[in-house]
Image (cartoon, rainbow, N blue to C red; front, side, top):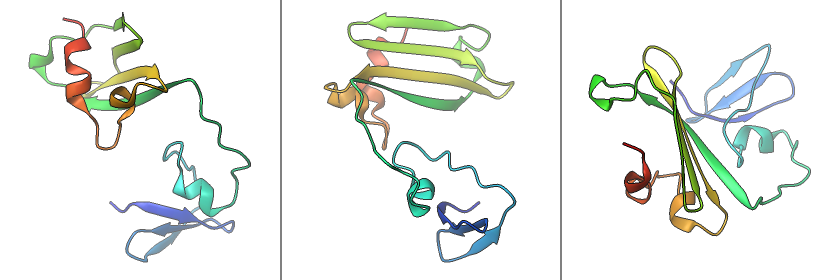
Amino acid sequence: DSKAIGARPDGTLELEGGKTCQADLVVGADGVHSRVRDSLGLLSKLVELRDGCGRHLVPRKESDGVNSQRLESWTGGRRIGIAPASRDYNYVFLCCSADDTEGRMQQPFNLAAWVGRIPG
């Protein structure tokens, strides 16, 4: 496992620590502030939207109680959704407005800002 920090037009993927590897296809799915995309000069404009959403794959535990359910909750200005993604993971989305600084904190994730709003 190595963190990708950039890519080159010839399909070379640049990894943290100075290593590189060759690829036929590189998909830069590393978020809105993508280092992979930016290393290729592909960004023409970054627009800050009024609302945003963090999406996460969370390991499933039997004790969660939501593993076979799909849940969605609107609480104030926030929206939370949970759905099974696979046998081992749940898909979780957390949406809030741009002025919700606690809710927007994704890295590191601010669990305390959301825990009281999760249904159940």
